Image (cartoon, rainbow, N blue to C red; front, side, top):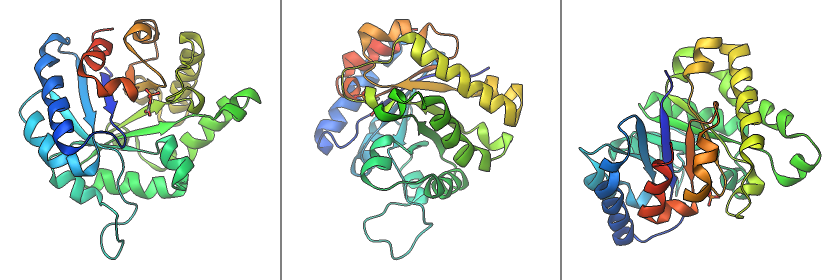
Length: 251
Ligand code: PEP
């Protein structure tokens, strides 16, 4: 049975002391959230060690927001999957649209990143989603299908147990424009169908598929009520513990 998850993507926000306080506030309210809902905070690399000290031994899991597509060596400024794992983080987000858009992250690079993350024992939140132009051209299903084929189809059914998919329509990220529950559900159902076609019904049924894009306490309930939406990847609203927990209480 797939797991429900609410993951907060802090992006490039908070200093280390602010991040530690935010993590403490999330932990403090985490007991209110039903036990079946996984809670993850995804922090900048600089925050992973101190935040691991806060969330370690609690139900809140820790994620990076990215990792390198190379194992180790002369790649100045990069952070490897092994380094992320050594902080105590259990997860990494990969393929966020901001990485694809601003840092040239291609599906080919993502395959390498996912391989290295899994090889180092990290679980992966893989982001997919169309931009506004693609949505307006009616190409959203095709775009998401191609991203899934290019990346996830390079992995096995067993490896899929360590991968969560996050559908994030780029036009809804940080814009205040949320996909309607109906728009999100139709893509989530389609993603599950694509997974079923390649990996079989069991893997499709067991894969957690998160929605991301201006999700907040006021709209999470309707989104999470959809049969194929298993939770959220939360950006802006994850920077306030009360909003993040409010979203996690929306199941
Ligand atoms: C995100 O960046 O993953 C995201 C969903 O951002 P926001 O909630 O701010 O739209």
